[in-house]
Amino acid sequence: MRLSIVVLILVLAVGSVVILLGFLTNQEYVMIPELSNQYENLEKYKYELEKINQYNQQILKDLEKQIKNSTDIHLEPINEEIIIIKQVVNENKEELERVIEKLSQMESKP
Image (cartoon, rainbow, N blue to C red):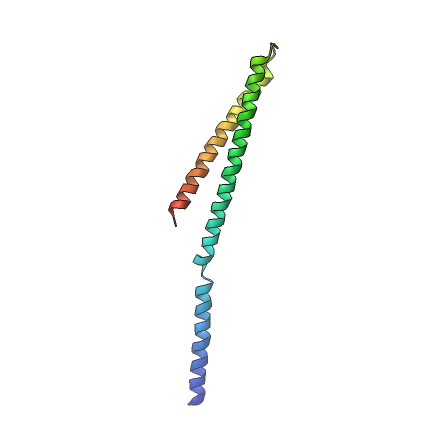
């Protein structure tokens, strides 16, 4: 009789430990840091996109100044650069808008 009680207590103890470990290592607890890590990565990406966009806009202004101050009639290469920079700026703005939208969605979901 004592042996069966000892075995039952042992089984209950082991079962309790297994259940407790199951709760402690549940995937939901692991996903919270992953979401905050994703959010931080998006924040960093947004910051980098903003820096790139500012840099490209500065290049665009410089190129436009070169055209205004130039007396050279061969301005085609500068005009092509301006077109390319404008495309890059527009693409960066679109990407930045997507990142901001994703960040706002992540903020609204606790």
